[in-house]
Image (cartoon, rainbow, N blue to C red; front, side):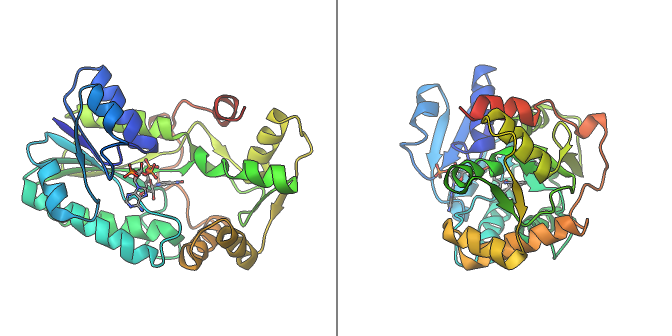
Length: 290
Ligand SMILES: NC(=O)c1ccc[n+]([C@@H]2O[C@H](COP(=O)([O-])OP(=O)(O)OC[C@H]3O[C@@H](n4cnc5c(N)ncnc54)[C@H](OP(=O)(O)O)[C@@H]3O)[C@@H](O)[C@H]2O)c1
């Protein structure tokens, strides 16, 4: 049995479906039985509950050979770090209480830093919690920035004719398709060749700057001169708040942009075949942007 958190989300959904297709028993988790119904119909055991409920997670992890964990959040959350700690502590409590021995945990590039990395600090804290659990094998996948983060730019393009963010136009960023993360996690869930606590980065097909990503989007949309505008950090946070982010999380994203610009939030491993994945940003845009 393999337990998958976030089974209606970017990575967990693909992991759960791929496991089912390959004939593996899956326990799929999410907050809503309705949203999990398709997976149930396809043969998954589904368990609905809140990801900060340690008793629920303990039942969901119990009897699993391996579990896939992540820290979901709502962008409008008033205190992001407190919400993430709440979920992270429940996950670790459930790992301890359920007796599960293998965990694949989604984290982020930059999670080696305790601070100055915006929302990634919550994944640093979770990595620390996971390392403190003894006798459990933990594989931490530190993913680059999801390509999906750029989809809200489509609205900005439509409304304002530009893409804007706080990151410098030319700084190279490891960006990745969430499906590539799912595929790497899937392989790790089925593999038995990792032991103790291991960290692996997933850096996408190549580093892409915001300027290049804007050019690729613009070319796809028939707007080859689409401008990228680098915003001051305060303005970036304001823009995010207008889009529905809490002041707290908007401030953390502005801090992350600064961390990227100052080259503090970056890959530790450096790019190599083992952390490079297949899907290009061009292929993602061709599929997702119609
Ligand atoms: N975005 C990035 O660039 C990036 C980079 C590296 C790491 N990460 C990390 O990747 C993780 C997210 O992975 P993902 O994209 O696969 O997941 P996701 O799609 O964001 O979320 C997974 C599931 O969590 C549930 N969820 C949503 N809001 C929630 C809330 N407020 N409380 C509880 N559950 C909620 C939803 O399921 P239900 O509504 O069905 O319950 C959703 O399908 C996060 O920890 C993020 O920090 C992100």
